Image (cartoon, rainbow, N blue to C red):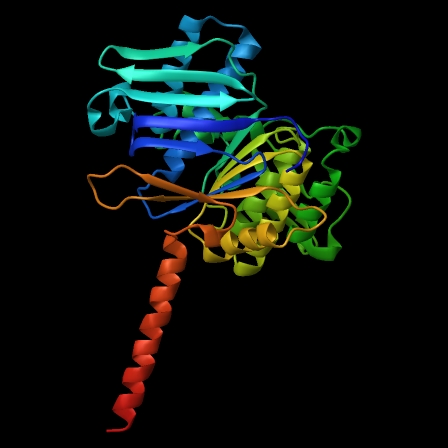
Length: 359
């Protein structure tokens, strides 16, 4: 593990959404969440993000405990898109309890029939967080802030926060020394060896353009995979994402070809090596195994990687959590299980085909 400052250390959940009782001890570098649909991966990242954003806001504005409770109440509504806190309580029965430990400071809250109650002795002062959704967002950014503030949209507040971050202007080159190598790597992924030294991505009135070797392209003419990589690039260039940030990325592999997925695994390693703490949720065999290989075979730039498997034996049981340093430590790995099942199906079809050929 790198010697950077301690960030998110642990999270405990009781009766919160799909979680009956669970505790997570996180890596300071990369945390990989795997599991079938509806096992709470996105909920886990969103509750972490929500609490960290409330803490950020509290320290920026120096607001009271009561005002913090109100802000948490609103943030939960807007991130989870519920109109009642009680809906976040598992089966809407009893009391939900959430406890976050950040840099050795604890912050917890409860949701009951009486409302939401927050408790802390010293509120954590976290590094800025960024939440990237599974779908690319660059092409949706134009006009999004005004639309979100004035209309009813089917987007949660993580999209609004991301749009605010993307609308910050790029920093001067001398301010980017800590992340310049990362920027160069991302530019090369998008534009290859022909990547120019000037701005690869620019924004005009909220609309993005890519200055590529084949020409100046409107964002809507750029492949989805490059838009996702471009989002990281632009957030680094405008200072919204720094070496001290906390990055949440839901399904990085979505709309990426296998070659890009391998590059993303390397980029995640490099981001973490600078000091960034990263949380990703994935269904992808290639991405999860590339990260596991990085953990199994350390290099000069190796980082601490932790895998969490979230699984649910049946509809009545709460989420069960397993953790490991590599994927081989995980007993319930739905990604590997399905690949093994596919291999068996192929064997059966091959056998049946040979039997039919002999008759």
